[in-house]
Amino acid sequence: MSRDTYESPLSARYADKEMKYLFSPDKKFRTWRRLWIALAEAEMELGLPVTQEQVDELKAHADDINYEVAEAREKEVRHDVMSHVYAYGQQCPKAAGIIHLGATSCYVGDNTDIIIMTEAMQIVRRKLVSVIRVLSQFAQSYKDLPTLAFTHFQPAQPTTVGKRATLWIQELLMDLEDVEYQLSKAKLLGSKGTTGTQASFLELFDGDHEKCKALDQKIAEKMGYQACFPVSGQTYSRKLDSQMLAVLSGIAQSAAKFSNDIRLLQHLKEVEEPFEKNQIGSSAMAYKRNPMRSERIASLARYVIADSLNPAMTSSTQWFERTLDDSANKRISVPEAFLAVDGILNLYLNVADGLVVYPKVIEQHLRRELPFMATENIMMDAAKRGASRQELHERIRVHSMAASKVIKEEGGENDLLARIANDPIFGVTLEELEHIVRPEKYVGRAPRQTEEFLQETVAPILKKYDDIPEETAEINV
Image (cartoon, rainbow, N blue to C red; front, side, top):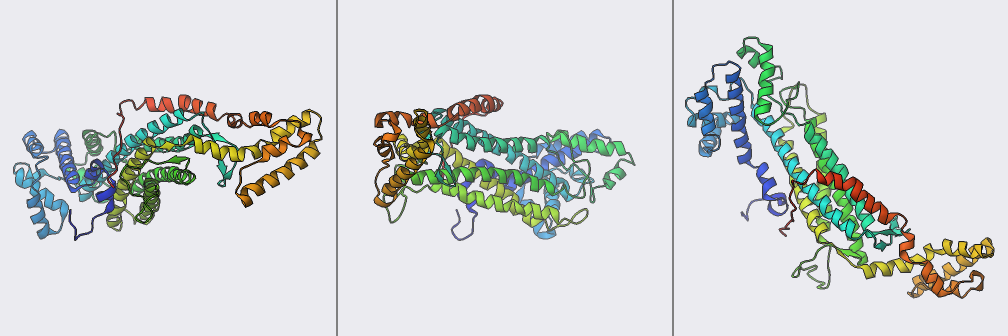
């Protein structure tokens, strides 16, 4: 670790090694060599003067990259692609003349970018599934536990802890659907030439258009893809980068919503994120348990959401068949979005897998508010026994105002039920009222909704990913 040079926190603190490697120089240059092998092999199969011996030589040196030669050459020629063509040729003297035959820099650069983004999105998919799986277990465990629900962060009708978790899961399922859609239409650039016309390949193939088309298809198949973009300029459409980061932005939005809910619940002392035995919450206040992991999710999510605008603006400002104002931006915006989302999902999994629920606090908060919510039921029961609905309404209003005053101005407990029990017009005892305001009577279909959602919606989706093993996420700091 260098202490006198800036290092991105996304790499140093947040993302996993697996994701960081995808955006490393080594991954890039190894993929370049795979692409040069695919090109040479496809050209040989289509009749160009490329021999099996040359292809075999390229394959023999696919991974032992002579970086020192490439780096020295780049200092001379100031061109990364041609420096690596030269270095590869030094290792493969028989194949040196056919490396990169007919191609432009975007052949290796753009195809590699697509391959890396696709593989990165597959990691995102795996981690997304893991989070959904853990949250589903949480929702199942707490599907029946009544809790105070909020609208406008004001007490509203009760729900259950498990039902609330289904709201988090549902947004992640929407994200997973977007990830799958993006992966389902993955295409390479192929080998399109300097302005996308394949003119150089048409020349090599003596005017044979079908061989030019076949070249793209063969390259795609050799690299594990079904197709290439049918048309392009010199580059693949930068709209692809925008679409990729839009998916990542969606995941960030879902994660931020979850993290905000947990932060609010931790303030209420109802649910807390995991807290290590020796973790310090505050340098000044030793008693504090700050929701730092949820806060970090929110922080990184905000970055991803803002970062997703970069490729959108880049895509919208490209000129004709190619301009270069995309390059510096995408070198930063695309990797950082994936690294940040990797960090977000690590945190999400860690928090979701270690949530601590405090049923007694939840019940206490619910019982403080529930008498107000039960007044309509109490009023209807009294009306059935013959009392005037208008008079009952007025008495409820008076008692509610008085009970609210005790809570807000005197700091006392909610005594609304006692006030109603002592009012002859209602004709009900305190014991009967306590029975009426049992929390489970006011959660509606929440337990059943949770059960149905997990069984009918989530389980079939997770079944598709049985091959993804269960995992835990370790947090570096």
